[in-house]
Length: 199
Image 1 (cartoon, rainbow, N blue to C red):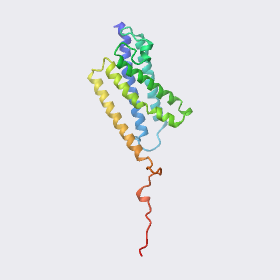
Image 2: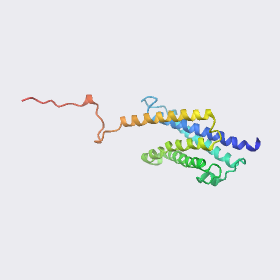
Image 3: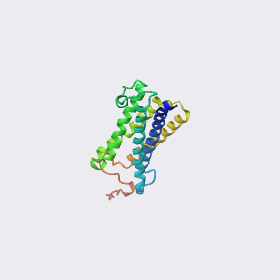
Image 4: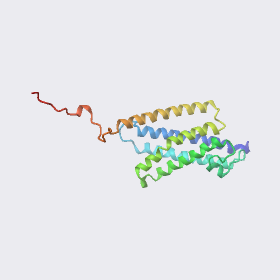
């Protein structure tokens, strides 16, 4: 049991990292698509989104460290940073490595948001979607808990929730987007129809 303690820590921290990241993504979608109303939100709501992102980094770090310390399945530094280098389920682990880079990109640009353009930050933040995708694939293919029914139902429920939230976000963004002419949409009741005098 003592020889495998780091393996259990790696499994647990990996699942927790995925859950925290998924909640953070859903919360970000809820804020941006106004699930919670159109009024200005208290600062703690945005702070919670940032906190969840930071905690996902912490648990991913714990996940990686415990894999290095584990002697049950030996992982070296190269295995954790080079996709396909691991001899243990190389493709499944490669998804996790790609997810690591995406997570770093999203979190670093979020920390530097005040120092980079809004456009650059927004484009990088959209990497949260492929991050969620590859990390979910990694969770279901690399972990030994992937056959656990509770985990599978949790993943399915979470994926459905994020897909719905993403759809709502896209629809509401389109509703507030200017028309193709580049002019903002004018409500029909405000359009004044000129009157003509008959001859």
